Length: 391
Ligand code: NAD
Image (tube, rainbow, N blue to C red):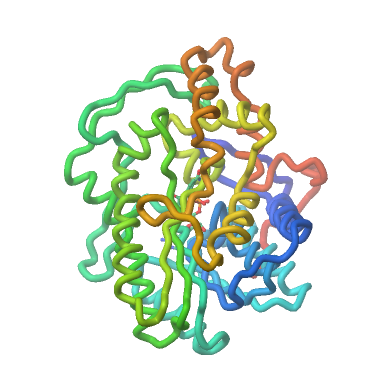
C-alpha cells in the first residue's frame, strides 16, 4: 500500500514503516557519532517505543552495548491498516540491534498490570539475570489499578482557578484564546493515579521481590517542569501534581532501597514534540515559539540530544548535580531567564497573522510528521510498502 499521513486533530492515525525505520536509524547514528556513554549493561525501558523512552533505549544499546528489555503498548499492523509508529520503531530497533549482535526483547502489553510485570521478571530471569538500570518513561491517558480493577483517566486542567490563554489549533492553523476550567479534586487525584509515582514504585518493588534488581541499580522517571508560560497548564496543573508525586516516589525508593544502594532520580527534560506533548493544549504554540528562539540561539535539541546528554553527564555520575528536590536537570537551556524572556516577548505578540513569522511551526509540524515516519527526504512515499512488519 502507498501510505500517506492521516492526521486527525493532534494525532496521526497511521504510520510509515520505512519512515519509522529512518527515524530510528538517525537516532542511532547520532549516538554513534557522539561516542560511548557509561550506561549499565542490563537495561529495562518501560515505555520504550516512542519519544524519550525510545531515545533512552537507543542510547543504552548503541552508546553502551547494553542488553535492552523494553515494554510498550502498541498496535500491530494488518494487511489493511498500518501499525502504530511505536510498533514500527520497535521493529526497526530490533533490526538494527540484531545487525550489531545486541540482545533485545520487547513485551507489548499494559505496563500498569501485574501480568506485564511478571512477564518482564520472567524475561529478565531467562535472559539477563538482573537489571541495573530501569527507565520509567510512560505517558498514558489512563491506568487500570491492578489491585482494585478501577480505571483512572488523567485530565489536563489547571488547578485552583480557571485559566484563559492563547493556543494554536493545529487543524485550523489559527491562534485563538481558550479557557480551561479548573480540575476537581477527583480529577487531580485521578491524574496522580495515572501519571504519578505509584506504578513506578510498584515496578521497583516487584523487580526487587523477584530478586532481579541488581545492587547499585539506577532508576529514573521523566518530568517536565517548564516556566511561567506553561505552569498554568502543566507545572502547576493536574499533570504537574502527578509529576510532584514522582518526586515523592523517588525519595521513598531511595530510602527503601538504601541498603541496595539504589539511586532513584526524577530527570527533568525539555519540551519536545512527541505524541504525548502534542495532545496538551498550549504546548504546540509554546513549543513552536520555543523552537524558533532556540534555533536562532543555536541551542535547539530534540529527544536524542537530551537523553544522550542525560546519560553522558548526569545519570551515571558519582555525585551528579541535582536541584533542590534531588532532580537531574537537562532542561536548563530551555528554562533559563534569557530564553524564557525571548519566548515570552513572542508569546505576547503572536496571533494568526504573524504566527509563521514568530514561531517555527514548520519545524514543529515536520517533527510531528516524523513521529509517524513521514516527512523524511530520503524515504520514497510514493512507493508501495507492505504495512505488515513483524518484530
Ligand atoms: P510518548 O507518547 O512518546 O511515549 C510513551 C510511551 O509509553 C510509548 O512507548 C508507549 O507505548 C508507552 N505506553 C503508554 N501507555 C502504556 C501502557 N499502558 N503500557 C505500556 N506502555 C505504555 O511520550 P513522551 O513524551 O516520550 O513521554 C515519556 C515521559 O517523558 C513522560 O513521563 C513525559 O511526561 C516525559 N516528558 C515529556 C516531555 C515532552 O515534551 N514530550 C518533556 C519532559 C518530560
